[in-house]
Length: 260
Image (tube, rainbow, N blue to C red; front, side, top):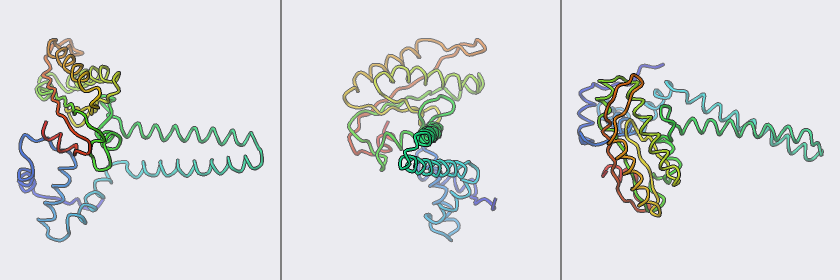
């Protein structure tokens, strides 16, 4: 890999402070954009748009992006071939070949569905992730598709739990909270999303907003009024917070989220 593009830590920290308030939630995209913008100013060689491509190229070398793209391309190629085989089989009235082509198509469809599930699922909780929210629940400009309310759930004492009880207990708490909300919201057709870290969101249509708010409050009370038992038998309290905010169709998700 080529030498990584770098900034002095103090320079990047100051840039982040200029861009965002200390109490503001930030995303990985925010960090990426700030890094690129600051690097452009410091080097004064390439524009942010051109630097963005270079930074992303180095970033993607660490992941399995190319493997994923190749797998998708291969599946698409296989599907095209199977479709062609099916057309030939129909022309020749070869039912055996047609059945074989159909079975292949089913197999490739399942593979693509599995890849999509992996892409949109959080590893720890099994919930849908931030990418699912952006790609499936918002429009192409990351705006809401209809009126409704945005629900935000956060575990406020998670760092303390991790520090005093260990990361296994922290993961167990995240899974416990996720399972409760997902189970209670799913029956109303609401997806509970792990947005980032210990922050979860749900986009709720106006038609079920009142019922969902009641369910969330009941779930919050349940968590707050009982202690959580870890795998080692330790009892601990979970400091959970639920916030809601109305939004209207075509309003920016980020705009609403920052006001929670």
